[in-house]
Length: 382
Image (cartoon, rainbow, N blue to C red; front, side, top):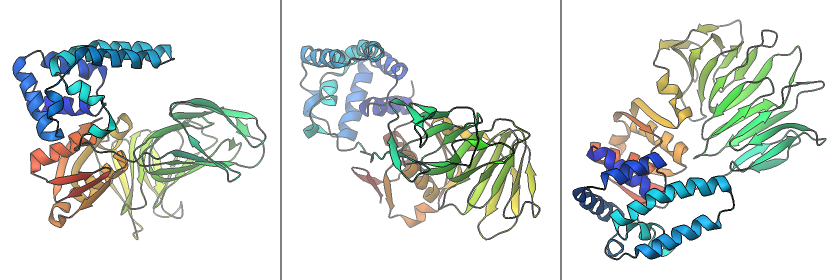
C-alpha cells in the first residue's frame, strides 16, 4: 500500500467514514510492526493525540463496543456492526489506546477534525407548508386531501405513476450544503439532486401538457420517454427540452454560466424563445450559456467529469482554486476563507472518491504546500 493510500485510510478511520472493506485493508496493513509506528506518528502529528496512545485497556474497549451493539434494536444494524466489530477488535490490538481515544468523551475531540454544519432537507408543499426530510426514515407522501401520492424511501422520494385530473400542484425540494437527494417523478423520471440545489416540480403531470420542472443548482436527469409530453428543464440561463434521455444540468446561482452535458439521447437548448438561437446536443457534448450572452456554446467533453458527483466523487479539471473551494463548501457544508488571493487563481486537476474533507485538505497541503487553519466548520487558507 502506498503512503498516500495509507494516510487516506487512516483519516477515514479516524473520522468514522471508513467502509468495512477499507477497515479490512487498514487492519491487514497494520499487521506489520513498522506500519504501526507510521500510524502512531501520523496520528500524533496530525491529530494532537499523545497520552491516549500510551495507555490502553483492551477489556474496557471491547466492553464499550459490546454495549453499543446491544443497545441497537435493529437486526440489520446489529449484523453490520457485529461484522465491523470483528475488524475493530483487530485494530484495537494493533493500535493500542487510539481506538479508546476514538470513542472517548467530548473533552478529547481531535483538534484537526473538521465539524461540518448539519442542515436539513426541506420539502415545500404546494399549499405553502414546509416539512423536513429525515433521510434515515421512510413515510408516505400525501396530497392536501390526505391521499397517498408517493413514498419517501430514505434518500429518495418516489411518486406514484399517475396524471393529474385538475391543475398542476408543485412541490419544491431544497437540498442544503453537505447533502444529496433523489426524486422519482410521477412519470418515472429519476432526478439526482446535488448539494445546494432547489428543484421545483409537479407532484403529478397533466395529460396533453408538456412536463416542466425548474432548477437552481445541479441535477442529473434520467428522463422517462413520452413523445406526447416533452420534458423541459427551466434553469437559470437556459432551457433544456427532451423526450427521453440522460443529462446533467449545472445551474448554481453564483455560476457565470449554465452548463448542460448530454450522456445519452438528444436535447435541444434555448434561452428565451425556442425559435431563436436553439441548438441541439448529441452525447458527449456540453452546451454553455453565459450570463448576458445570447449565444449557446458547444464543446465535446468527457461526461464523467460532470456526472461523477452522483457517485460521490469530486472531479476538478483545469479548475481554479476559488472554484474548487466553492464546490468543497457545497459538498461538505463548511466555510472557506481564502486569504491567499494569488492561490485563488491557480489552476488544479484532482479527483476524490468519497473522501472525507480532511483527506482532500491534506492532499492540497502535501501536493501544493497549501497551509490552512481549522476552526470547527471554518477553514482559513493562509
